[in-house]
Amino acid sequence: MADVQPRRPRVVVLGGGFAGIGAARALKGADVDVVVVDKNNFHTFQPLLYQVATDLLETTAVGHALRDLFHEQPNVTVHQATATGIDLDAREVRFEEIEPLRYDYLVLGLGAVVTFFGTEGAAGHAFPMYTLADAERLRRHVLERWEAADRDPSLVADGALDVVVVGGGPTGVESVGALAELYREILTKDFPRVRPEDAKLTIVEAGPTLFSMFKPKLQEYTRRTLEDRGVEVVVGDAVSSVAPTRVTLKSGRVLNAHTLVWGAGLQANPIVASLGLELERGHRVRVESDLTVPEHPEVFAVGDIAWIAESPESVLPQLGSVALQSGACAGENVARLVGGKATKPFEYKDKGTMATIGRGAAVVQFRHGRTMKGKAAFLAWGAVHLALLSTGEDRAKAMVDWTWAGFSHERPGRITVPTDDRDEVGVGA
Ligand SMILES: Cc1cc2nc3c(=O)[nH]c(=O)nc-3n(C[C@H](O)[C@H](O)[C@H](O)COP(=O)(O)OP(=O)(O)OC[C@H]3O[C@@H](n4cnc5c(N)ncnc54)[C@H](O)[C@@H]3O)c2cc1C
Image 1 (spheres, rainbow, N blue to C red):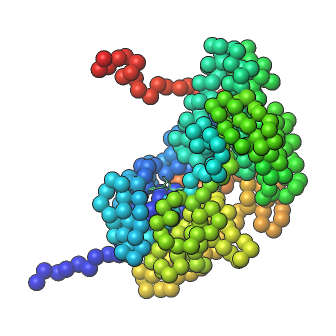
Image 2 (image 1 turned 90 degrees about the vertical axis):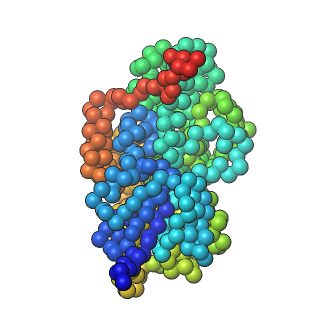
Image 3 (image 1 turned 135 degrees about the horizontal axis):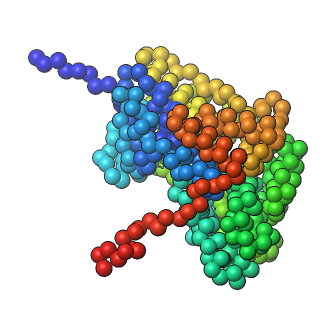
């Protein structure tokens, strides 16, 4: 009788973000078959998206081929496919493009999606900052508006160059800070006929302050730094509707602006609705201390999709480092279960909460209250984020681009290449 090899347990990892990569990498050497599935064939480094949108980094420094990350890991297979539903009882995931996959263990790392909270016109006209496609779309739109205003200067008064950024959290502040640098140091030189005061940048936050998660002195520093860089800071007001060239605030104020960047809200990937689980705020999946989903010891939820509570009062934020570490812990726990051991609880190693405001300006707050701001904080931010980049090659690319931009104040990527050359030469006409 022929030997029948027992099938190795199959671990399906949904999502190739920080959380999914952390999980798959932690299974290196484990006696399992790992299948990583993502709707894109690349990993996106979200913390640097705003640098793509403002021409500081190229897309390839922020998106990295997923398959490349697993060359040294023979137990991993990668598929590009979109998950459409999960049957927790049947232990099966359905996809748009491939046959359903059955699993012995499932790691849910599908991240979050933008939510516009029903704001009128936002879905059609706002520019969110959550994917590489979003960043590229914003980059092209901004450059296109400057070229349009150059051809027809009357557009300047109509707000063609003005940008409203919604949300006073890290995404909003980092985006408006980077736009301020691009506007004041580059575009006003590219387009010398435009006076800096004719290209307005405004950040709008509904709450009483920017960066509500930081201490008041860091909030004040952030506000001052942005204002010094020519940004108007509006707090205690919210966007009520968005049209292609106008933004209306709840207070009734109407801003002429052809660009509205949305950095205001996220919710967990909508696929969680198919799970039949009770969801927490932001539709996040509550997990046990070992990151398993209640009643499903074979399913782990990690990263932005998960509600990871260290205590009833303290829920971990949706951050790259939380995603990477929780993913790694889930992978280690799967390996432990396969090896007949009990799982271990997740312990987050907090390196501090940090955000940039622009070149040479950042804020850092450590768990036990110590804070940093200015250049030292900017260097700390750079070091932590370089460490999060997925490969040495990406780190080298980012270093070169940042250093070059730091010395030269240049943004080499500010060209727009037509996406379909065939239209231009009339192929098929
Ligand atoms: C603009 C911005 C700035 C940020 N700045 C910072 C920062 O400075 N520091 C920091 O620590 N964190 C920052 N964050 C947060 C950090 O990026 C996230 O917490 C982290 O990316 C979450 O990782 P994740 O793996 O859970 O999800 P994601 O990184 O979102 O990965 C989810 C993956 O799932 C895939 N996917 C989604 N739906 C499907 C589907 N149906 N089928 C298949 N695949 C799917 C996606 O393509 C994606 O690759 C920032 C986020 C944004 C948006």
